[in-house]
Length: 402
Image (cartoon, rainbow, N blue to C red; front, side, top):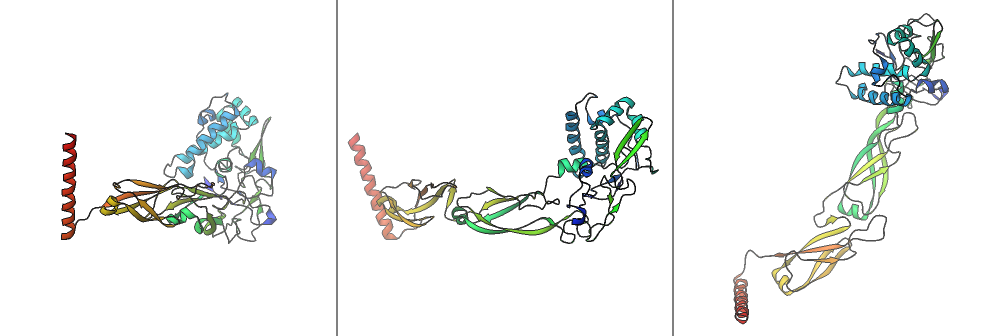
C-alpha cells in the first residue's frame, strides 16, 4: 500500500473551510472540502475471504449488526494501536474491504449473487478512462476514511495537567496562571496542512468528480476515486512544519480562579482549553488535577481540620489555657484539670468552608503530654514528694474500702 497523505485540510479560504478528510458521502455533499486524508493506493490484492466471515456475522445480518461488527474490528486492528503487530494492518484492510461492500445495499446484493471471488474479479477491472485502478471498487478506496471520521475524529485532545497548591491556597482559594503544552494550529500554514498559496490540482482519474464508474454487462458500479480519496482534488506538497498534520505542540496558558475548599486529587475541567481541533469545531478540555502539599501544622479530613497541642505535665494536671493556631489566626483554648493524653476539644465552625455552601467544618485540637526526660534536683524532689503523697492516697483509699 502506498501512502499518499494524512489528515490534510484545505490550504486557504479559497478552497472552503479547512477540514480533515471526511467520509466519501460527505465529500460528495460538500465538494469544497477537497482535502485528501490518509489515502492508500492498493497495488496488491488481499486474498479473497468471505466478507461476512471477515466481519464475523451471518449472511442475513442486519445493517446495524454489520456496522457494529465493523467498528469493533476496526478499533481492534487499527494500525495506530497495533504498531508492534505486523499482521494487524492486513486484517484492518480486510475488515474495511468487507464493510465497504456489505454496508451498501446494492453492492451487497450483487455480492450475494456472485460470491466473493467473482465479485472481486468484477470489482478489480479497469475504469472507462483506461487506468487499471481508477475504477476498481476497492483498488485504492481509502480504508481509513470511515474509521477516522466516525471513531477517531472527535475533536481536540483533552490535556491533563497537575496543579500543586499549598494547604492554605486550597483552603482559602487562589488565582493561578497555568502554563502547559497542548496541540495548537500550525502557525506556518495556519492549520491548513499545506504551504500558503498552494493550489490543488483537479484529479485526472475522476476529472474532479470524486467517483469513478465501471460497467460490467448489466451491472454498473460507482466507487470512490482511489487517486484523490473522493475529494476530486490532488495536493502534492504539504507543510514542512506540521507535515500535513495541521497541528503542532505549543505552549498555552489560562488564568484560573480556584474556589476555596478544593481538596487533594480533585479535578477541575476547563472546557475548550485543551488541544486544538484541526477542523476548528471542538477543542479538547483542560483537566487540572489538584495536588495539595502537606502542612506542618494542619491536617485535613474533609472539611474538618486537626491540630496537635502539646501540654506540660503541670498543664495537664492543673489545667489552664493554651494558644492554638487556626485557619483564621491563633485562639486561646481552655485546658481542664486532669487532661489525659489523646483527649480533644472541638472548635465548632472553625474548619474549612464547604464548597457551594455557607457551612464550615470543625477544628479539632488533640492534646499530647510532654514528659520531661531530665529533671533538676528540685524537680526530682518535688516529683518524689508527689509520688509519696499519691502512694499514701492510694493506701488510704484501699484501707477504707477494705
